[in-house]
Image (cartoon, rainbow, N blue to C red; front, side, top):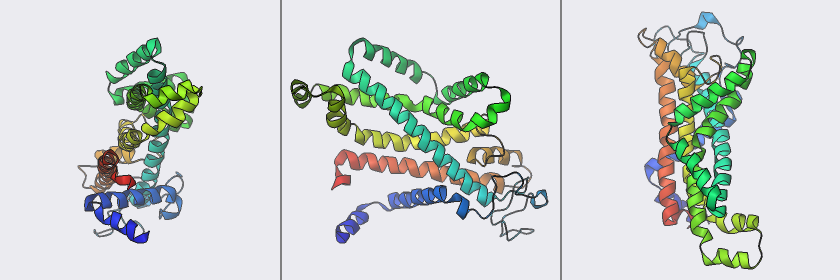
Length: 299
């Protein structure tokens, strides 16, 4: 068994292995962020302005307490990156899960019931596809903030951000599940299941759902990268999470303000982490798509 596992590992391209290691590292950092981070940057009373704008450890005038330097408020850049990765991973997981559930339900209904319901749902999907994802996320965020008093905006920022990203990405799941469901419902085994008197729920869950899992896995991986990018974009635009919450997008936004003052570490490190996070997810999604299409992943 061990030899079989090692042989499978050897077949994986080096680039994919690197991305898998990176994703495992990001997951570990996300789960254990409070214990890994050298400093607590989640509280506004945990940092000192006298430590502001310190360079990374290998430059002059640095401080050994801050390996990657500090920002203009004295917050440790390394700790902020760790908490930023945790936040991005959590937002991606929750938003993708929400979009997956909503999109699959709509896709199953449209593909299985068909008729007028299918036409109505697909026209809604077409309208959604005509609008950019970032615009839909901004619209959802704006509507939510308009309905809630200003003093509560900070409290609802996280759930609104998750909902905005999910609202912008559910259509991919709906279209994929609809097409697969329509194909599977025309096959003989589904007609046989109906003749046997099986319930529609059982037919969908036991006979149609297994055929949808493979494309859903690939879409979810790609959409995780998209969700991270959307969260960073919204935070960069100032409509995501509050400024004091460690976020990769807000770190990039703050870094832009000091890009011409010589404090390059404020923008380089969060941009690099964000690029590695998104790039590794996209490479992993391409590899998963190939493996699932050829069936090699299950061998």
